[in-house]
Image 1 (cartoon, rainbow, N blue to C red):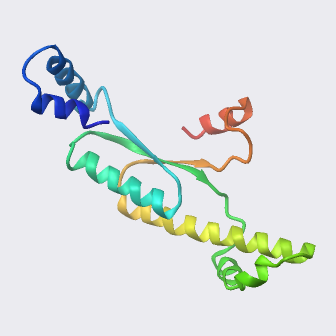
Image 2 (cartoon, helix red, strand yellow):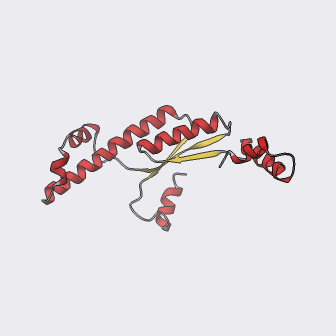
Image 3 (spheres, rainbow, N blue to C red):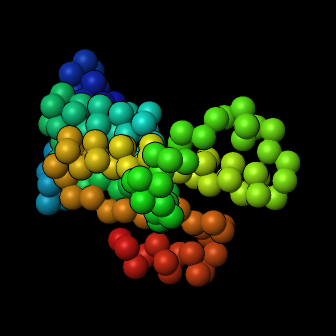
Length: 156
């Protein structure tokens, strides 16, 4: 969508449409008026897509980038060593969990895997994206509630 005004400027002959596209493209390029904020999640595919998008925005489009928002960040429950130990548990055993203890262990193992994926994704975003970052917590409730909005607004 950010390319549309540029494409119009490049291919449409002079006229109202091109004039409006030139005005929009000029506004997009002016860092005192506009910047692009990329939003992602701390997971492998969204992080990869965010990094590719940032490269395209800065390289090909040459638009100002205002920052990177990482949404749905889980607070850690486990240390790296605990994540490794939980990640080593046999998945077949966990899939057949029936007792409360086994179900709790299966839940912990699942969470440990999520935390590990998140840790790798956050490290990659930190290393490969120089933009200012805002981290928003994973909310276990509707994000449209007044309490949730207040919590998120504190971090913006």
